Each structure stands twice: as structure tokens, then as C-alpha cells.
Picture 1 (cartoon, rainbow, N blue to C red):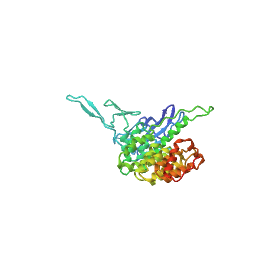
Picture 2: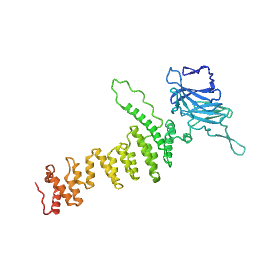
Picture 3: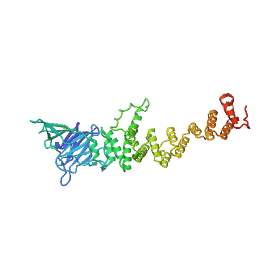
Picture 4: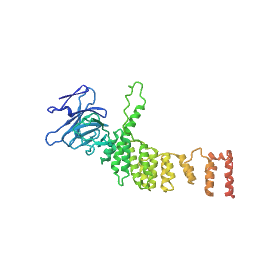
Length: 445
């Protein structure tokens, strides 16, 4: 039997008869496809063979097989690129997604239903009555049903027409595998809010599966990385002789950024002290995934991770994250660590180490001055050091020895000695020195 599709002749498998009612034409992920219901002989169950047309003038190629594990009468709809196979005898429907990876022989991928078979939602019709209106419950999977693509069901006896819609939240609730739910939701038009809530619910479990959570974040960041690379490619300048750029690729149906994760998941865990450990797990998994896909971590995530680890006294873990580059060095993060120094002394040292790696000498000098380590700060000073700043800090310490040391450093250095002649505000420090050490004098030029 020959089936004509877009002027391309499709020849069914030799020796096997294909009835018109067993053939469905559909578009899956923008690719035309022919779906053929195969009733197996013997004890074997029925299958749906998916033949895709990858380009004009090319014959459809069998690329996917849907294993139904049932026999009897079937009907097929396509909703949001998901294949719905309705089974009349069991009054249930199975959902298949050919974009998901599954068992393969190298040419054909064999799929099983992403969730257990489930009936469509019951529906009723309001009927007029003598006293009050009544509701008539419509028979689901009726022999009178006629199915049209992509998502239309008509009951010829009742004279009713319905459009099948996908309730993604209900579908995901039937799937125990978080990673599978993530892959499924990333390809649905309404998947973003559902996926974010799904991740939040999983993280809030008493013992969430960190392996599955990490895998879910990897799928999310893989989509984001691909989109970011495409955006950079489109914005990159090309030589004049280069051919004009091709049509920009379609954006992904679900694109989840770091801000989405922060405001829709992590921020909701911050106010609950009982969820601090789960927050730490989620942050570590997400930032590790960002690092694996070479996506720079935004400041608000790094800040939240540092605050959480410090609050839970996980300084060893924080040092390891900094050492292995999971948390990138930056001046704002160093300032945050300094502000947390009152909670643990090592936070200040981590901040100083970060500033040293950043070669932020000016910031190091300011920190050391605030800590009263004036001589150490002087070692990090540049050529334009202000003697007044150091002497004022030494005076506020009320340490005569420190004041003497700082004044001696400046007066014995020709580079700074001239400042005492030009800046009259430094004369007060000379007077303060005479007050502290009346028996000593400092040479004046």
C-alpha cells in the first residue's frame, strides 16, 4: 500500500497491509511524521511506528517505535508534541515523547510510555430538565468517537467536539523520576512554572535525591548553554566576504536562568531555618552544574552560598569551593566574607586570600588599616600613599609605639618627607608626637 505525504511516496513494509485508519499524519517538533499502528500477530502487543520526513524529496525513515503493551482498538492524538495513544478496551491513554532517549539499536529508538496509562478527565453536558438542569456524564473512549489531528475528539452520537489539553502538573505527578520529568517539562510550552515548582517540591523533601537533582540541573543548564552559544554566534561580527547569517534558531520552549532558580526556588528556602541544609545542597548542586557547563555564576548565588555555609559553620566546605574554583573570586564576595568575619575568624582570612589572588592591593590596604595592622598595610601601599591616612589611623589606635613607627617610616623616606612641608594638616601629627615623646625629637627638614 502506498501512502502519499507531501508529494513523497511512502511504501509500507512489504508483505504487511496498512489500513487507512491505522495511519496518522502529524508534526512532531516541527518535523512531518507518519505514525502507523501495527497490530502484531500472536501474543505480541501492538506498536506505533513513527516515520519522520527530514527534508524535501526524502523518503520517510522509521526512527521511533512506541511499545503499547496492549492489544485492541486504538486512536492517536498529538498534544504539544506528545503522542497520546488512546485504548478503548482499558479506557486509558498512554503518553509518549520521541525526544526522550531510550532503548535503541542505532537506527530506531524504542519508547515506552513516560507515565502509567491514565484515563482522560471525565466531562459532563448540561441538559435542560423539567424542574432543574441536569448533567449528563459523557462516555469516555466511546465506540462513537472520531479522532482528528492534532487534538480533536468528536462524539458522533452526542454531537459533541472536544479539544484535548495537556495538564503537565498531573502528568509529572505520575512520574517518579525527577530527571525524566525535567526533560519532559523542558520541551513543553507551559513547562517553566511546572518545572520550577517540581524542583522546589523535591528540594523540600526530608531526604532529596541529590543525584537526580544534579541531573535535572544539568539538563536545564545544557539548554541554557546551547541557547547562549547561539546568541553569541548571532551577535558575533562576520567578515564582509562571509555569507549572510542564517535564520536565527528558535528559542527553547523553556529557558531557565539563574535568576529564575534564585527567586522561584532558593529564596523560598531562605526564610525557613529547617531548610538550611536543603538550601545548601541545592546551591551546591546548581553551582556545580553551572561550573560543568562553563556558565559564570551570578553574584547573588555566590553570596547566598557563602552566607549559607557560614551560617551552618561549613568553613571547610567553603574553602574547598574557593580552592577548586567552584565559587569564583570577586571583590564583592571578598567584602561579603569580611562582613561575616564576626561569625568566624576564618571568614576574614578567606577574604584576604581572595583579595591577594585578585591583586587588589588597595582593598587589602584598606582592610589592614581597619584591622589596625598599619605596618602590614604599608607594605601593600602604592606610590601615592597618603601619610595623613596612616598617621590618623595610628593616632586613633592610641598606641604610642605604633604612632612612633608610622611617623618614623614617613619621615625617614624622602618620597613622603616632602609631604610634611607641603601639607599643613600633617603638622598636628608632629605636635602629637612631641606630646607622646617630649624627650625625643623628629628631624624636620
